[in-house]
Length: 109
Image (cartoon, rainbow, N blue to C red; front, side, top):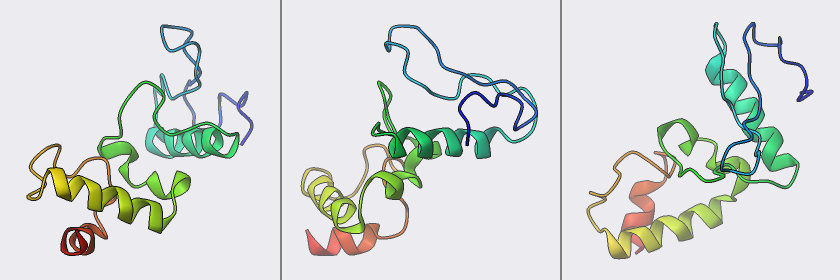
């Protein structure tokens, strides 16, 4: 995807030169395709050496994209560490990590 192609998803998107130092991220998409555009932008960020999060955490929208930046082994280790500190996964449930693989991480911890 060409970062400068602002009409690809029939809306507007672009970077924000705010407190984040101008990191690229989905800012405005006015018509359909917002989720697809956001995913493409984040995939491009990772492919260019960046990360999914910038100054924000990983919530519901980015959790399934964690596999773009991290291997399955990386994710399993991160989930095992979370399980040590939050065995019942009460903190930020259904966020940060892809939903698949959580049970295996909890059992392995």
